[in-house]
Picture 1 (tube, rainbow, N blue to C red):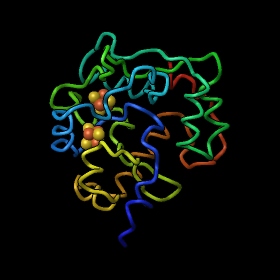
Picture 2 (cartoon, rainbow, N blue to C red):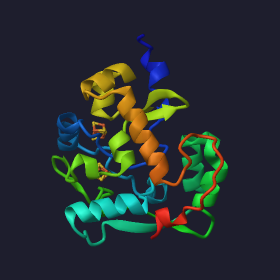
Picture 3 (spheres, protein in one colour):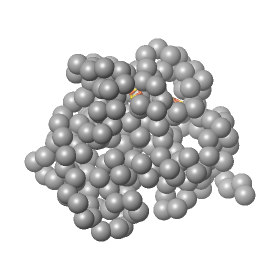
Length: 210
Ligand code: SF4
Ligand code: SF4
C-alpha cells in the first residue's frame, strides 16, 4: 500500500540532532556529504540535544577503530534532552527519567567547531556501518508504535529522492524488518525495555557511563 509522503514521513527530524548516515545508504549519503551539511552536523547550541551513545556502542567503536581521543563528550542530562527522548519514546517517559536523571551525564559523539561529527569525512562517515551507533544506522527511519516511519528531514537526500517511507527503504535496499530489528537493538543498548511501555526492571545507568 502506498501512503502519502505527508502521512508516512511524519516524525520531526529535529528530535535528536546529529543522526548520521544509514548502513546501506553509502552512495546517497556520500553524495549528501559532498554537497553540504548532512545529518552528521550539529547546529551550534544544539549539542545538548544530540542522541546518547551507550557504553556498549562506545566500546564497539573503540574496539573496531581503536581509541579515538576526544571522540566522545560527556553531556549533562538536561531537561530538553530528556524531553526530546520522550518524544521519540512517548510510552517510556518514566524509564527515560530514570536512565537520564537530573544531575547525571551521558556520552554523545564529539563535534568540531563547525558542528561536524568527529567521524565525518568529506565522503561521509568514516566508521564501518556495523560499528556506527544505532541511531546513526537507523536514520532517517524510526518506529511510530508498530509502524515504520521516517523523520521529516527535507535536506536528507534519501528523503528528497524517496519521498515516501516505502520508496526510501527501497532506495537503500532496506527492509521494514531491518528497521524494526535495529530499533529493538537501540532500545536495549540505551537501557530501555524490549517493547515500549514495558516496566523498567534493571537499573542501567552504566549504559551511559561518561
Ligand atoms: S558516527 Fe558517522 S553516521 Fe554517526 S553522526 Fe558521526 S559521521 Fe554521522
Ligand atoms: S541527511 Fe540523509 S542522505 Fe544525508 S547523510 Fe544523512 S541520512 Fe544520508
